[in-house]
Length: 407
Image (cartoon, rainbow, N blue to C red; front, side, top):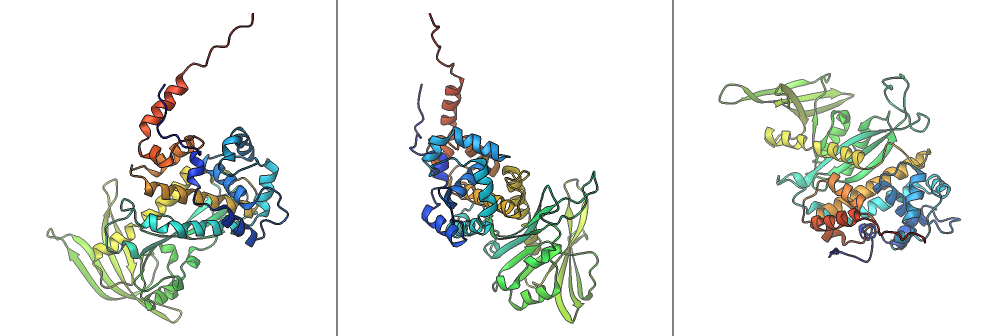
């Protein structure tokens, strides 16, 4: 039987987390009072345990404990010396601050943002891509309304369910959150738009839920361009109205210069209306709002369409990681699991950028989960996985050795 040429002395999980420095992470935990009265389950072990669970998509503490017990020798090679009991992990999720995991995420993001932004496969070729930030939020439904106030009604029972809203900002050329905030599902999105966080010549694409004239005026004063979708009920005065037609006499774009007046604010903006052809072939008029008066309508439309990127990110995270079941019932435990999910998403995104072979994120997450505790060279295997997978299948199909009968 041929053997893999990509054998490595450490499991794939150990290679995936090699950028995590134990001393630095324990210091982060100590900073947030996470090491008080701790004997063995320090912040680093807690992080690695949660990462293992999230990557493997486990739904319960029992699954985590059982799997880690079965892999105890291999986990020793990645820095987990003892397998935590369910009660130990549950207590740690309730006690150790989620701020520790947030700091780990932000430190890891800062260390890898250049790798993400240098991946030409992820980035577009447009000149404005490097200046573009995208803001949006997603709601994660919870089991109870007692922890985070829910919004809306359950379609069957009519009762409200709890929900936590994850507000995120991403750079379009990176594809992972650079800023994250948690609120209850009932919180309005507009609080996340902080003009002071943006610099001159930056562009921000956002949903119409973020429309706020005072903040839009401040963005304009700072030289920051915003692009959003119009609401139907907005009141404004039209100053200029211009229609662009194609050679057949049909409308391509309609440009309007308007002024919004509210609470002593006079905000001058530009409305661009265009025809969007849906997948079913039906045309629909879309109106965009921006404070930019120089870029052509086509560019404004292209900028807004990049909003799909953050929606795809939310879908990617929810499809590939366990956010339907939580390993604790407290607000702290829920936030920890979301931060660890974001860390796992970041680690896999960085890996995806480093690989020569093109992987979809879901495909990469699946294969990593399957071979997580195999002793294979991570990047070599993922760049040329076919040969090793054939060997694994052949080994798995072999009959076990016969046991001699007792005489």
